[in-house]
Image (cartoon, rainbow over all chains, first blue to last red; front, top):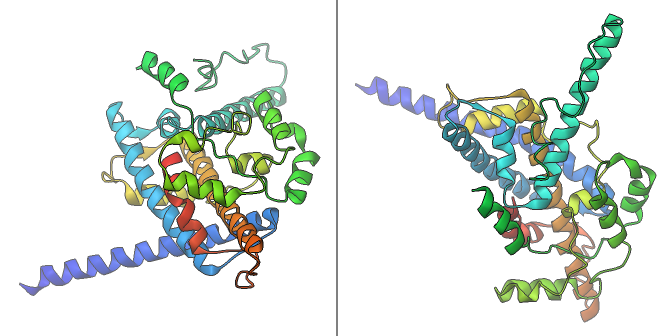
Length: 143
Length: 189
């Protein structure tokens, strides 16, 4: 019965390889971000810095994933929605404002695109009501 | 919950993270060139104004270390006007990610999250939610870099004040800088 154990070891190795590849991909993007930011901030970063930052982001994403999943589950859903993500920022007003702003812009862009398509279609009289639409979060800003 | 959240807003202020702006020549130029991108909030403009006056530029590292050594928030409180409405990364160059690719592409965000979900088969992510998570990570990364730069800067100033010219590594962000600000960063996110 060596088969199952060997199989598991293969699986472990595969998982580790996958994790490594994900991490190196993340590393690449973080490195790029660090480069751009350092240009802005007039500084530069050591490779070790980028590596550690990658590790930090990895851990943060790990926690985030668990949180989001729990939030969705708590709402008896299997799909993570925007509301769940906004809940991540519940303890940081500045961050929440940023995310809400982003959501509002996302919605606006979507609406704009939809309207653009309508205009291309020609003169259909159905004017879309702006501001009352499916404003996830935007309308709740004051609350 | 809504009532408590309202109370929480009033009673618990976000700890002020109000570093002296790094010599903002580039960042301000960027911000000034595209001032209107950050619409729909007077907060951004007010924070831009507050960025004009050098806040605590003389002893940034010192104030930091005191805040770390004594847990009372009293050491942080003498900054009624200096608390930026946006966290640092957004203040320095708020215009950055208008139509730009996010730091981590959404496909990778998706893969990473899915990798970490405990119920991989069932849990899914809405398209919009993915974008917002992207923004979240974006902000996280930028903030991390900005705070590290701030740490580094404070240390540089300290070394200069002591007369020893560091190790000659002027302005390289190091793991040390990351380590110093990581706990607070993770608490803030």
